[in-house]
Image 1 (cartoon, rainbow, N blue to C red):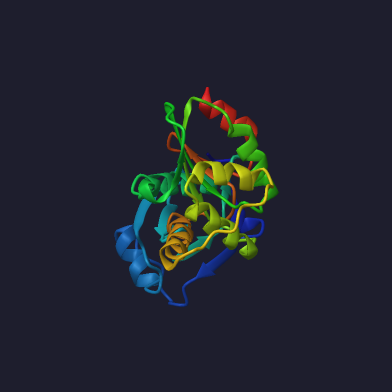
Image 2: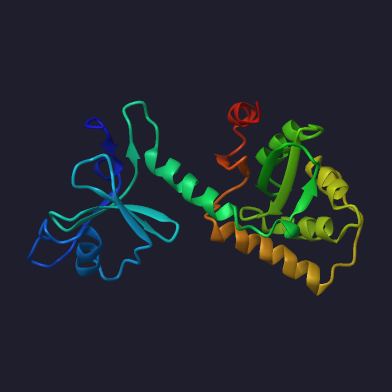
Length: 231
């Protein structure tokens, strides 16, 4: 990966520790980063394919540490084919967290062989497009969580769906742009809607739609990629 581009060189941010010394190569990277950047929470650290450069996972962030010069690189790494390796790694980390999601708190549709975990927003046009694409497929088991980050007004629709006797039907109606019947929403439903939002944040979902299809992340209404994973 000698031709790999470090996005920190084209718009990322390069941070250097103010200390006068550079970490000795005999110091282990996990020790070196704690000494150089004690303010950074390090969940894991591992070598990259670039000699001397280490990947650092800090919460939902993927950073890069160069211990020889005490440098912390905040940015993304691309290959010459424009694959975003940093984004792919974030997707892998999110997919690991998805395994622990409480699926009983989701709206379930179908009973097919492919498991699709979906974070969506009933007021998002791209979410509706993706929902229409998946609608009616018999080979899916869909677990739907709501995360209307960009459309706060959609919260009322989310609560109406979660409060409905037939949640799957209410979801389909909402995603088709149909009006939902007025429903009395109690504190339990409001709390469930908030739980779903919190779960999205915990696994690093920043926008909708976001899918995890048989453990593989798809961000956005990338119908071509979704179709590939469902073959």
